[in-house]
Length: 108
Image 1 (cartoon, rainbow, N blue to C red):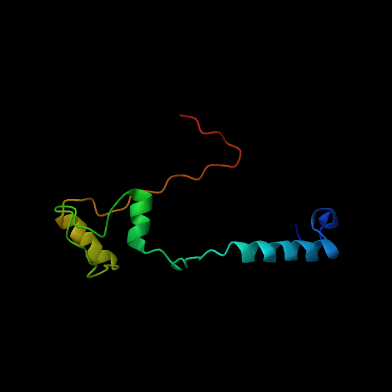
Image 2: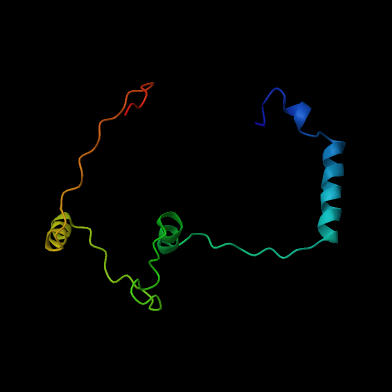
């Protein structure tokens, strides 16, 4: 609960109760010491793609053994359009759909 909530004193222990809980936690911590492994701060984009879309960007899709490396990131729209056209893909993104009004049900 928030520090200034009206019902906080009824939920959060006060005074000697806090000291007793702190002592109990300290004793419990001394009895069962466990090693805690540090997590990496960030997950790589390749792992995120694997988690979300089941696309493995770390291994070759043909042989499965080779490791893939990013050699370039193309960000300029004219270059992206040329590459997509060369591959026989439509270079324009799909049009955006209309926004739905609040409270409107989706009807198919």
